[in-house]
Image (cartoon, rainbow, N blue to C red; front, side, top):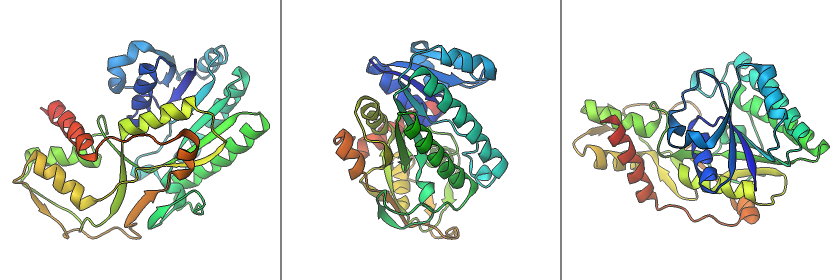
Length: 305
C-alpha cells in the first residue's frame, strides 16, 4: 500500500489529490503551518496525518522517522500574480525543495512527484508536447526550471523515480475566490454588467476531480522518470465559458466583450498534449464538461448563499 506525503495539501489542487487518495485507502501525510486554513480538507481532515512546518528541526525529524514511499510536492511560495517576478520570494522555494529531497532519500522514498507549470514553456500558441522548448519569462517560471534540474539530478543520483508534471488550466470546486469562475459568480450576484476582452483566448480546462484521478494513477503506476504535460484535450474560449456561467447564474447579466485590451504577449491558444503521460498510465475517462461546470457552479452558488 502506498503512503504519500503531500505538500500544498491545503490548496486547491492538493486538497483534491488528498481526498481522492484517501478514498482509495492510501495513507496521506500532509504538511501545513499551524496557522494554515484547512477548510478545503475539512470533510476528511481526520484521515490525514498532519505535520506542522513551523519548527524546521521538528518537522524534519518527524518526517525522517516515517516510511512514506511517495512525495507529491505541490507547495509553492509566490503563486500570486504580483509575486511572480519577485526573485527573493521565488528563490525561497529552492531551500525547501532541497530539504524535502534529502528527507525523501533518508526515508527511502521511491517516487518524487513535482507539480510544475505550463509557465515553464513561456509564451506559446497552440497544442504543445514536452519537446516544446522551455522558455522562462519571469522569476516564477525560472525558479521552477531551476527546481526541475535539482529534482532530476538528485533523484538520478539517489535512485528515486522522478515525475515532473507541467500543469495547464484547471477549474472546479474550492478554487480561490479571486479566480475566474468564483469571481464571475460573485460579480453576477451583486452587479449588472462587467467589462472583458474579446475573450478569444482558448484554454484546455481540466476538471479538478479528473486531475485528482490522474494523480491517483500517477501514484499507483510504474512510470518512467521525466517531464509530463497534464491538460484537458477539450479546448474552450474564455468567451464561451463566461457565457455559460452567465446563462446559468444570471441570464440578465450584461457581458461587455471587447472593452478591455489583451495583455501584452497574450497567448491565444494554450493546450498541452498528454499522449506521453497516457502512454504510461493509460487514458482516464473525463467528466462531461457541462456536468463538471454545473457541479462547480452549484458548489459556489450554495456556498455564496
